[in-house]
Length: 153
Image 1 (cartoon, rainbow, N blue to C red):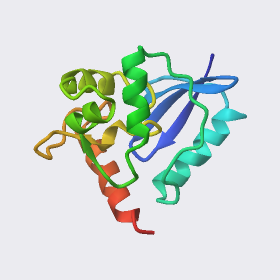
Image 2 (spheres, helix red, strand yellow; image 1 turned 120 degrees about the vertical axis):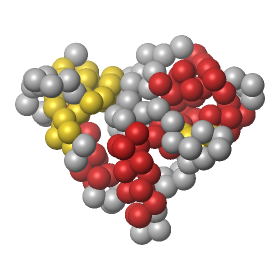
Image 3 (cartoon, rainbow, N blue to C red; image 1 turned 135 degrees about the horizontal axis):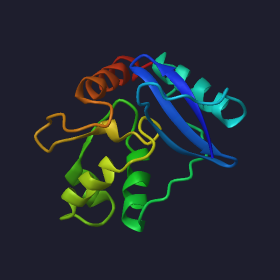
């Protein structure tokens, strides 16, 4: 497994990948070092740059997630949420055929190894409130505002 550091508008992100797919993208701990990006990492960095510039609405990156069958269903459903839109945990639970499992959806959302690429930031509370996010609520709010701003273009 290789790691590379992406310098995002929100701080450094640690990308873990191997030949054939991205394993994780998360906020890097202070002092984390990565290898010089090449190959797949360069593609991911280019797509993230485009996303933060409002020019990319979906990611075309091979992912290698390693979750439970339930988590994988949730993560697939998250990727179906259109750019600039949000869904509640209950909406996701219903979409995957487990309408009462909205708390389990929240746990799967929390375990998402590829934030932004698998857009868990688009999931909100049933009352429209912003709920937990691995990058922090200010980042979640900023990502949603970025998408809202560029949704029509």
